Amino acid sequence: MYEKISLAGVDNTEWLRLRKTGIGGSDAGAICGVNPYSSAMKVFREKTREDVEEKDSEAIRIGHDLEDYVAQRFTEATGLKVRKSNFMYRSKEHPFMIADVDRLVIGEDAGLECKTASAYNADKWADGNIPLHYIMQCYHYMAVTGKKVWYIAAVILGREFTFRKLEWDDELIRGLVTVEEEFWNNHIIPGIIPPPDGSKACDEVLEQYFHTAKKARAIKLTGFDEKLRRREEILGFIAELQAEQKQIEQEVKLFMKDNELADSECFRVSWKNIDSTKLDSQRIREERPELYTDYGKVSHYRRFEVKAA
Image (cartoon, rainbow, N blue to C red; front, side):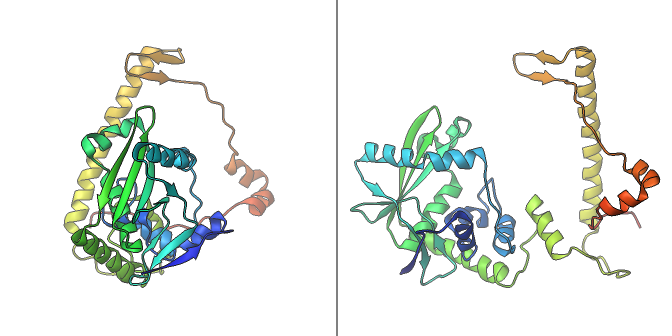
């Protein structure tokens, strides 16, 4: 049903490389388009780039550090004991599917996913709800391990502890496997870029694949006139909104005059003194050309412009 890959002695860099060999639980919701913090394009970039990207943030650190606490609270609330698994699991039937699970439930054909959530996201857990991308993550783990139940427990910081129970769903798991298989075989393996989604990750993928233009090469642009007209319309809206934004900021500055801080019941505004030092590259080029030549750094990029015909 699955093979076990030992994680004993595996450092974080090697673990990240292992994750590039398949679709993991945290990728499932992004590929299905239900993860508000990720996308299919981001997964494509992570799986196809040559290097590994070390991720670190306060949210990631909190989630990692509180994992044991969440598991302990789950045991206290349910009486079910859990244990860590020092393995990564790979489905034998669908080798592109991997699972790096938080806990396994002792004496039950089940696993446990541990989450921490900001108090600002408490509403997403209200009335028995679970954020949809976490649901897909749990069903992905069921699909890989074959376990019929997956629990998800969450500490909502400063608010409450809660947990849910998800049970095997043939139709949902079959659909999830199909979506992941199509993404792996149609995009990851052949290196074919998914449809653009407007994300930063998409910009980075396009830059990676098409870094340099072929000189004096032009192609016929077909099928984009309406989209480019819409782009011009959007740029007009942006310019108007930016002007309105700037006007509001100027009105606040005029009100503040030479005061550094201003407070209201809703906002805290600062207009601080900032000192910065920048090299005068034009002067260096003129007065010390040898230094400019030795230390100047040439950057290569492609500029995108649209002009009316």
